[in-house]
Length: 302
Image 1 (cartoon, rainbow, N blue to C red):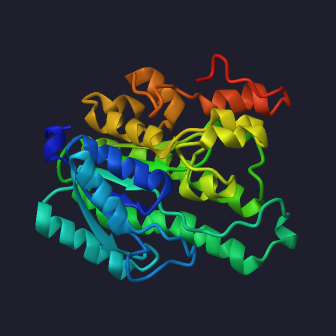
Image 2 (cartoon, rainbow, N blue to C red; image 1 turned 60 degrees about the vertical axis):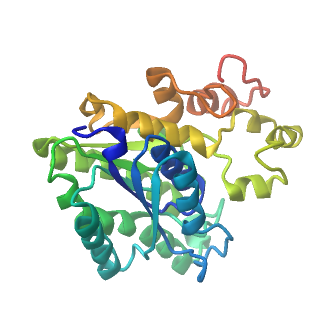
């Protein structure tokens, strides 16, 4: 990209927690200015009713060596997204990296479409798909103003895996496939402007909610392996964050244009590790060990 890491400006849309937080912090570690958006701030929570806030993420960006700017935005409201991009244009004059990680949806697991709540399912699609489209509509003119822009569509599952496997429920399956396809479509539209679009999936992510569900913290996450053996392949949000940071710093990033990528795949390519020094290759593990029903064994996979 055309600027030094410290001069880059990024927007992590959906940076309150989970992968978005990990990505924002690791971009901050490169010295970037990172706008962190989401619906949960210190004064108001989203329907997810989680305690993590955009202000906390921005502070972590600062601690990592970047400049974090929290902005409360509902990415389903076009006027709010338009105002956000206008602010970035006014304050920075440019936008080098757009990360669409917006989610914040309630999922009904393991229910066919006819037994699912239609309101919940359609809300999932709006939060997972419409938000990304709205944000791209307003932000991309600023991204393509200079050659070398990068758009990362964060999803769950590689294109290859999702094409061959049912992803838990009709609405979840559709949402994640749509995000992968968004990156494919954006790649065609961005290429003439010298910019790149990819989709990126973490593996089994140790998000705040996932750690809570398993009754562990990041410090003792391995304790959960006793009741969930395949949790041994899990990864911290920093891992996918380092994947985005590596892409953002790669002057030849255009070679990935339109590709469906995973954190484990990019760790091998760029040489970064997770916080514990390992390189978990979750999607290969899922395909070769977990899905065939083999005993949990991460040997050769992290």
